[in-house]
Image (tube, rainbow, N blue to C red; front, side, top):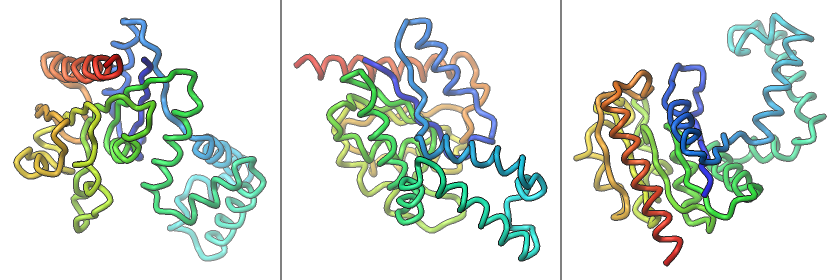
Length: 235
């Protein structure tokens, strides 16, 4: 059984939780794969190319530029995307909601792996994508750090939670008590299916620098999901 890691969208924020999990699986000789879609990889190449061609624009988000700068930013990005082998993936990403695109790309990534069974370990938005493809025959279990039940600055968004009760594979949500995306099990617990366990730990949404005791609890929860997935697979 392989392990697939699906990280959060905002990878600029510091977090060592998935690297620590990866290291522990490495000690066990478990194959680990970090999910990155071909479109994401192409986007990073485009950004590097843009930095070479228009370094002033590349260092900006495009929002703080004058209108000619914003126009140049959009035109160059679009031209490079259209020239990419992943042009159709970019088109799909422009037409569909980001959460649907992420789930679609994660499913394709898993299908391309040589392993027939996988457990997905996620952080934040990666949990939304993973739970949306939980019915995939290769997916045997899910462990989610900091599931984003609700964005702290938005109204409730149904796409985050409406499918969770339908997840029947072994699953654990490892949620920080100070996680601004949902830290109270009494509030988010009813949204989860009967196959999902909850582990509440002392952390915020970054899950960075957990104390050894807290990390040991998370590792135990992940190991239990993996064991349950293995037992279910051999039935």
